Amino acid sequence: MRWRPYRRKPGRRPERARAGARGGPCVGPRASYVDANVNFGKPAMDLAAALEGAPAPADGRELAVPAADGTALAATLLEPPGRAPADAPLVVIAAAAAVRRRFYARFATYLAGRGHPVLTFDYRGIGGSRTGSLAGSTIRMRDWCILDVPGVLAWAAAAFPRRPIHWVGHSMGGFAPGLAHNNALIARQLNVATLSGYWGRMAAPEKWRVAALMRFAGPLAVRLKGYFPGVLMGGEDMPGPAYLEWMRWCMTPEFLFADETLPERAHFAAFRAPVRFVQVADDPWGTEAAVGHMAAHFTASVDRSMWRLAPADAGVAAIGHFGFFRPELRSTAWRQAADWLLP
Image (cartoon, rainbow, N blue to C red; front, top):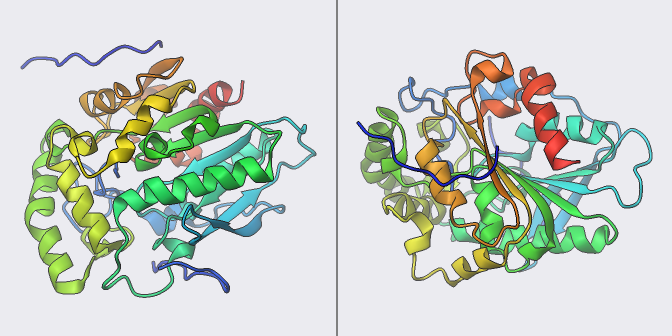
């Protein structure tokens, strides 16, 4: 489906950083593991169960990739089973906010199986890039976008100079390149559930729960603990400043685009690669309005398109904000996504 603007209708513990690592969304909201029918603290999907049994590719290599400020980011490079052509694209998978790269292992393995090297990485303070307690951390959400993502892009371009970079962004991982000064390095991008996180564009009743958490429970927890406890949403702990910045963006109708302290917003105008937005029909955060609002800011893209994915299209009962990466979608949504990403 070609790009069309949105028109409103009526009516587990994190992994620790490996030896030698240095270092110390926005999101399709950080209510990342909560579904519309689930109360706070009860994950919509059991993340541990989702990760259990995820195949570990034989050729996977653990790396430390430097962010733009030198902070070491834990990463995994999956090589295809056979020798990939020298000019075959390198796929980079960028996670949703505060989600470990392990979550995407199965999808990464699938793409590697189609003959392409695939890189996954953890943002600073998350998973293998976390170096200790988050209490007192100064990590902001923007740091993931303007330091970590540019560093990964620069490393990928230097390590694989003959390979075009094809980017897969989940939630925050899809709009983060818009804030990256070197986003011209991306040759093609697939965004899954990437949205403008203003709470008012979420589906009811979920938006009321998210608003209550953001306005009251979340800030109180940060004040008491020094970070946002992942148990409140069933996911990873989040640095306090990152949570509070995300909260401010999500309280504003224009989301991060209204943040005058974020000059990197101007880099959206430099993003020219073809980009496809996957809007999941039953995602309570990534509604058509929320995804459309974000997509509308990729104005320089030479080819914007939106793919509305319903559970029935993938042969499953539900998908939600995270379900796209379940292996049950291998023969349906994964195949269609890979056909577009790797033409």
